[in-house]
Image 1 (spheres, rainbow, N blue to C red):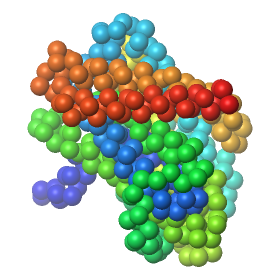
Image 2: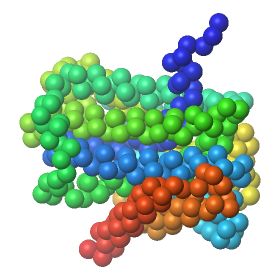
Image 3: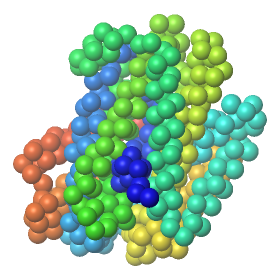
Image 4: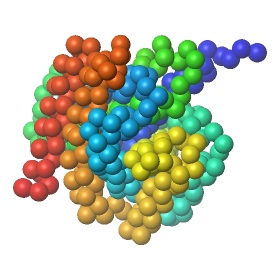
Length: 401
């Protein structure tokens, strides 16, 4: 019996969906909830800007993956030497490990608050569940199916919450007109930096190579783009929900789980649990996806390759999960020092990765007919200026102010 067209399409979306699930974690939900709660609909425009540049660099990653069977880190090593590849590989591993604690806490809170049980139990359970996925014979196919299911859960949860919230259509329309509300600059920059995830775009080349098969090339770039557009839709929906529910009441949120509590008085425990289901989807997908990126790139930088079928690579993925779970269990929350460390590594790493990707994608000897078009060159250059500006601002906030 032939496969249903929707199922076939969902399977083909794999690389883009994995990138979307990786980027849309608990920290992204917290930032989007706060934007809507504090500034209403007025910051919706920033989602369009961040998604535009994410699309440009994700497309670059997809074309780099399609242009060669050699990994992007290997191409960087060949072009600039072994040190460049090792710096990126170790840097991404450190950032992934640092932020993994936040993913562990997010998934623990989502289930603990819905079931009124201790958070630590679920941190342990879902990290063990994540590690157990590594024992599946075909880890990539398992990862694809899991991410599609979790993104589907998020979409259903957030769209249902959107329907219940009955937002203002005129407010939404006005929100796409660029403006910077007083005091919003920090949150806008944090959102742009997290949504325009250069590490996610970089890893897209690996996902494309992992899923290559006959006839895949024509569809790969479009399906990567659909995954990123879904990321944009989820970001917009959470901002709109917070803007329509929390902003009129003056309720401020410091975490995504607080938004679920704010829903309960208005819509009952059903809506609150539904939003927690979305938080679980965001947290568990990022927990697995983030560890996969950190472990794969560390393996590649150390010469173990990057294939998810490699035992060494799976070992490094498990290491990221174990470190993140240990930090969250020991401290109970993400330590401030660790956040500062992760951000400081990211400040210097992200522009470096962006420039490396851009240079590879502009090289006709490497890319052939898949080299950057004039539009990609111009848009990519503007994106790099944006990344550098974010890095300078972040450096100033962390170390100078």
